[in-house]
Image (tube, rainbow, N blue to C red):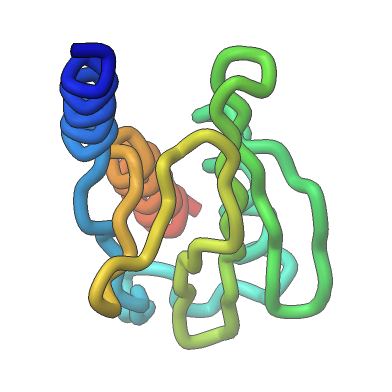
Length: 135
């Protein structure tokens, strides 16, 4: 009887974890157009990325030429996501780096993660795009 209860609990936990995972959505590289990002210096592009991130709670934890590493901390360290925004004069790309307590795993070559990751990155990407138009 104990084995059956343990098996049922393990199955319930497994289903609960799966419900909190979905395929990671990798945003495509954003290519600047004449109206978006055109004529900006590398420093202006970087500044727009950092400002957009700050508006949504992303903090800069690393920076080098052509790359800004941002971290989002939800719940005082309960959920942490680290991404790198690689940029040049032609566009930018958001790449996953690491996470804590976001159920990240690769299954059959497909990265899966907590659904909030996709929402957080989508919102950041949209805000970066908007900032490139407004300057």
